[in-house]
Image 1 (tube, rainbow, N blue to C red):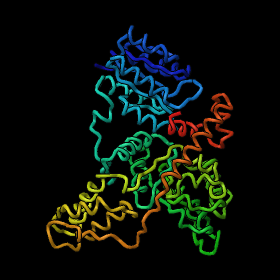
Image 2: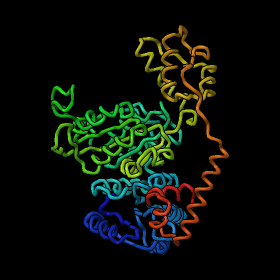
Image 3: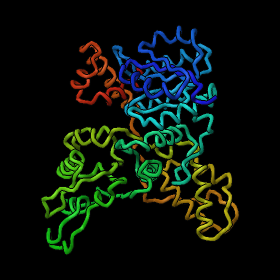
Image 4: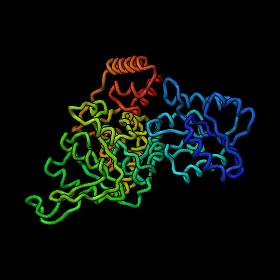
Length: 452
């Protein structure tokens, strides 16, 4: 069926959204029905045969958590309709939107969307009506091989889906994870799948910059601005203009450096050292850190206003020890890579080697696995690698595991606190978020996390 013959239902309690979608779709489809109240969905499904249903994740209730959208998605699926369901979401609810795909949604769109992109998704949904989620129907790949980001675990599949969804936007992304988990690969994938892919991708390890070098490297300098400034030089932000800036180890910069960075992000301008002339910049910002978000929230260490600025969407990469069979997938990938590099036959991984890999805790994560396999390929003389060929680096320290009881108690305390503040303000999220000292988006995430 073509889009022009389709019947589409749009359910959203925002009249502006309904008006915008109605104006966009009327010339494109056979019928577009809009509805503010999700309670009317069952009766609408009885009277109409829709090809696609666009459903908001949040409706105005005491608690806007995105779970309202999941609830009505389930009701739609239970009704027996073969309509494809597309969820409408905001940046802060992307994790819930990914959950909706597992519940049977075909796809989701992030507000504000590009009209051409929405029409493409609708056309795909009409063509694959009733066939489950787009991710399922496309048989999601084991990874993003073009940037060597691999994984079959559920956690990694969620990350791949999130990358493909948020990459085409200009949302600032904060990538979290232990050292060696692949944060730079995620950043490269976000750039590669973005609308800025043919523009520069500029990485800066800001944690390694001294106070004196920070401004010069990031914002540039004029000749004579300091002793070694022998010529005018553009900083990394100017160099990346039109493209992407990736600031690695953002959690290690000083409060003074944070203040300077925040000013640039707010004004979208840089001023070279030794100059008073501002230069406009157009960059998409990606940041990464191995510092847990809870530690970044300590204002003695990191400015909250900067966290909000760089963290429109966060991507948390799991440690390798929690990725199950991804360990074997990656090990086999690296044996091929390094056998080719050193012009040797590709060795097999014997049972003892596989057992050793699966029972190791990998404090150095994927990077440690990569080096262990490279060493094994170089040193081994046999066609099969066994446990004695796999030697792990002694320089890696075992990770400090958080006490499960302590973590559970802290989470329970946070859940109780949020509940109490919400009750105090009669479910008003704006006032509750203000008292808790977090944004509405951050509060949404916690509500979703705790199922409130």
